[in-house]
Image (cartoon, rainbow, N blue to C red; front, side, top):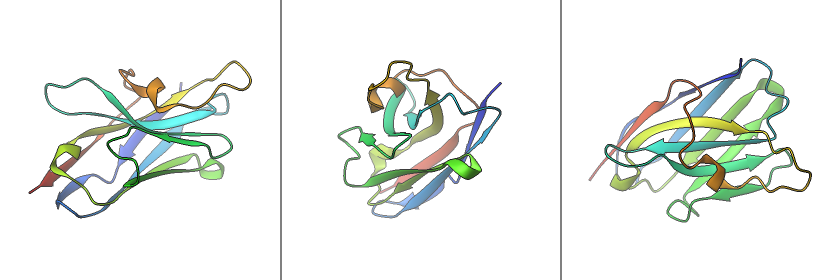
Length: 128
């Protein structure tokens, strides 16, 4: 069973930066699309960023240009670099995975909307 555990959250002021990490355990070889989603209090789970096997990336519009997703396949790690943070980025952040079974399917951030939990998340709090 694959488990994905996020870490690296904390509290920073608006305008600051933070880097989240996600450690994957178990056989992740079938998951050719990895990404991040977040959940703020009282809100739906929202896909934030996604990255495919060949480095194709996809972002929700609210973080485009501020967040960068990357992956280290050799070490089963996923990262999210977050810059120019805003109070509205405050949320629990989780990592997830998708098995794109049809050749040519794009690893889109929309797959991570409403995603089930894969493991522990990490809390990001941005103050004014």
